[in-house]
Length: 115
Image (cartoon, rainbow, N blue to C red):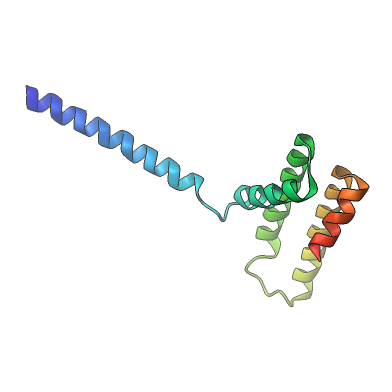
């Protein structure tokens, strides 16, 4: 009976350990749009001195940009006219969102950072 309980306890510990390892590997996927946007916005928040509301709006804008890039730009021929047009459209949408979010001084600094 003692070995049975020990076996059950060991199985439960292994089961919980596997769940934790799986959850950690999912949260460390750096290719997800949210992860890319988070690192970009963290850098911008430091450089542009963003408020909390501005950070949230910038995060949403950058997630949208990354999702759009994955759909219409990444992995395709960058010299193709359709891909270049899609990239320009996505970049224009990002710029509009950023312009709405930032103050004029912050926006000018952001534009200089993009070059």
